[in-house]
Image (cartoon, rainbow, N blue to C red; front, side, top):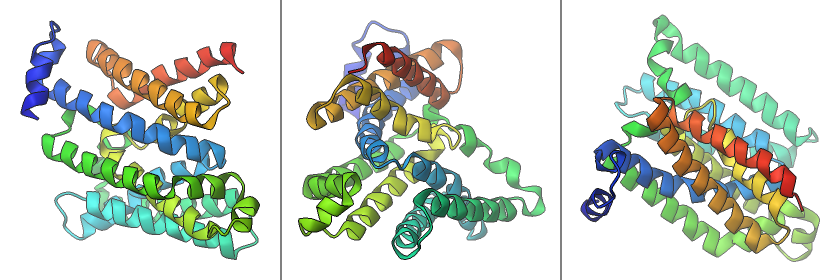
Amino acid sequence: MNAWRDLMSLLPLTWAHYEFMQNALLAVLLIAPLFAALGCMVVNSRMAFFSEAIGHAALTGLAIGALAGLADPTLAVVGFSVLLALAIALLRRCSATSTDTVIGLVMAFAVALGVVLLSRGGGFNRYTAYLIGDLLTITPAEIARLALVAALVAAVGTWFFNRIFLAVLNPALARSRGVNVWAMEALFSAVVALVVAVSLSWVGLLVINSLLILPAATARNLTRRTSSYLLVAMAVSLAAGVIGLLASYAWATATGATIVLVAMGGFLLSLFFRR
């Protein structure tokens, strides 16, 4: 962190000398590629609604953490989100109900349960910060935790990327090649749930799904190759993250929402260059 601060202090820019902006920029550089890589999978597998469900269901994780008396409910949010993701993957396999219906049912139950638990005694207002998020409040300890999650996701991607990609893109072909489709879908669902849950307090529940899918949707308009698709999505995500962060600093607006607006602008521009 000290080396990062020394590097930022060399920039002839006022914002670069503030510690909270240095932390936020470092967080963006970690979050953006992570969201882009997962977003490519989410968009290809037509599971955009799934990540939305995980983000909203995190309310119940907050409620569980609050009832357990945890000072930091992140662990409860992550645990519940991962369990919910695995439950959705299991129901998709065992039920004849369509995927979007299963996700909708589980999300409705989880959100309702979370609202009921959090609203006991009129305490819901204490958790509204999670709806909007605040990237500018991220601490070095939280950045370290985010880096650990990024390393874990990178390790999973290194070992299982091809199998996960094939499983979500063409399950029938994946089965014919000996891939355990359900296991790959469950692993991917758990990874998405982990990343969404860990990032929730900084990005915000209301916009986190948009940040996940917009860079991938933009890259899909600009390229046809799988390799370049992933790289373009990461570049778009990084650009939107940095520009949105600086814009939110200049305009004194919510950082997560501002980044999403910039990403949406990039998506609209990509329509003119669609291949």
